[in-house]
Amino acid sequence: MDPLFYALSYYRRRKFQKCTDICTDLLQKNPYDQAVWSLKMRAMTEEVWVDECDGEEEGLADVFMDDNSIAQVARPGTSLRTAAPPSSAQGMPSQAFRPTTQSGRPLSGVVRPGSQGGRPGTMDQILRTPRTAHTARPVSATSGRHVRLGTASMVPSTDGPFINLARLNLTKYATQQNVARALFDYIYYHENDIRHALDLAAQATQAEEFKDWWWKVQLGRCYFRLGLFRDAEKQFKSALQQNDNVSTYLLLGRVYIKLDQPMAALEVYKNGQDKFPGEVTLLTAIARIYEGLHDLPKAVKFYKDVLHFDATHVEAIACIGTNHFYTDQPEVALRFYRRLLQMGIYNCEIFNNLGLCCFYAQQYDMTLTCFERALSLATDQTVADVWYNLGHIALGIGDINLAYQCFRLSLVSNNDHGESYNNLGVLEYRRGNLETARAFFMTAASLAPHMFQPHYNHATLAHNTGDLQTSYIIVQKALNVFPEHVDSKELLKSLESHFHTL
Image (cartoon, rainbow, N blue to C red):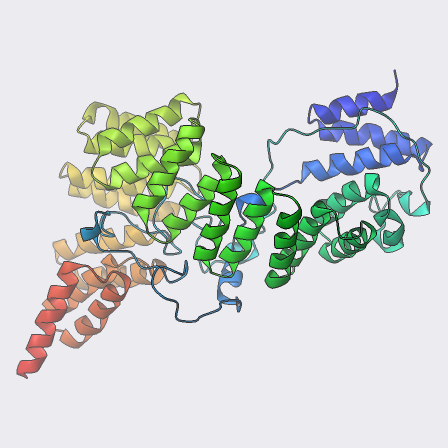
């Protein structure tokens, strides 16, 4: 049987390495076989393909070195970077009960790019690359074999790359649409050479007389990767004028998110919803923006709309369950997490959440069993959170010594766990070890700058030990993080009245 048929079969079954091996053998016999050359390009591309419509991870360097913001002081509710948690009087859970992530966003049900992927201030967070995911999208392959002879640029060297981009005549391949698209994907995804990909996309767009929307989308993606967001915006808008496509709406929305214009991104997604009613990816993108703006009731509403069209959407189930847990409905949250467990999600996080829901729903017989299972499945990144939650369970049953040991074990697993430092400081304060407690609070505040508890606890400690000036400075930091905290307001009012009497 023709080996190319086997290669196509492996490609359709997503066995890309076997497909690549067969294509390599065929190219050694006939280096100019363009059909095999194209198939090998597609197989190698699919191995590293990343769905860019779903968002990308934003490293620490991107956050602090970004100069694309339009307004330095944005209006309330119009910026993802300066979105402040609203007061609990508006029917939303208070920040005192629903904590924020390390980047300051509300804690959601899933770990998404740019949310909790890594600890800030560490080198691995800066150097982490977004090219780490794969996709389960079904692929297609051509059924016929159209053999065309290529040129010497197709011939791979034995010890070099598959395609020598420096020798590649992009102008020639830009006019061959049956090869140009596969070649672009290979350059863009596999070689990660954005400038060559941009050159090919520009020449192919010109060869198609600017009538092919697909090439305009690829131009926009290249501009986005190069940081030219306004140019990317023009290309995506031009592509939408020629053809309405869900991925184009998602990519255009990402441009506005990168420019910190969530209102414009919402308008784009809602326009996409008018064209594609019930599209799950657009509904999820809208819910994520509302969650980033701390508008949790609207976020939950759209997550429920997602479940209306896709009852097995993991992110929607997890986020709704998280919202019920932090709005003092652990019994309802327990149903959502049990649903995830029934769907086959079997990891440390799901058992950790089940254990917390069981404890607060007063189903004590299952609490420790869930946490034991969570510890058995925990990785180096999650074991600290499990011990931290076990410490809260120990506090709930009144075992202070067990709680202290759990928080210490959390720090053994992750020495940058700010929440554990804060709770250890509270326990040391109760024991009368004031200097140790102060050190714990200062460490927690430096590791978790978006937590108001270490600042408030440190201010209370300074106030009780007579250091009123330090208490006044630190309580203001707590109110900057959480302006609606009643105890911090009362402490500040007490300090101000004391200073007025002096």
